[in-house]
Length: 86
Image 1 (cartoon, helix red, strand yellow):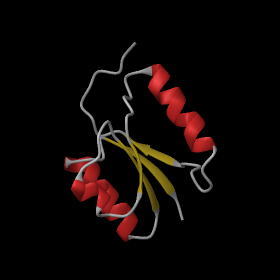
Image 2 (cartoon, one colour):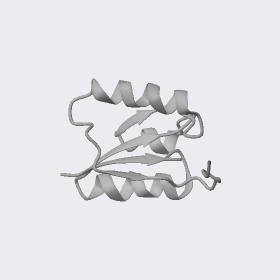
Image 3 (cartoon, one colour):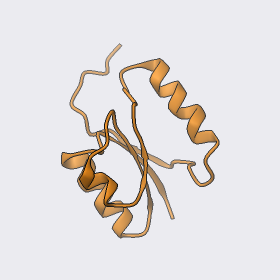
Image 4 (cartoon, rainbow, N blue to C red):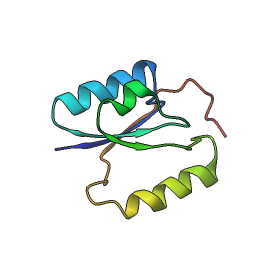
């Protein structure tokens, strides 16, 4: 079973990734600023309050995930349309 971190998971393509990944039996960890009722209905792990454009926010998430069994992600799916160039 693979583990996926999916950003922008509360709606749109991110939510659909969560649906399909969990339906096929892989672990989906939803990353978003705020959850949605549709996301919560999936019964997967949801990490809210995360702004992936903020290094501090991403570091906090990384520390939190270290303490969760089975959260060693093999794949990160970024679904937000932003410019991440430095």
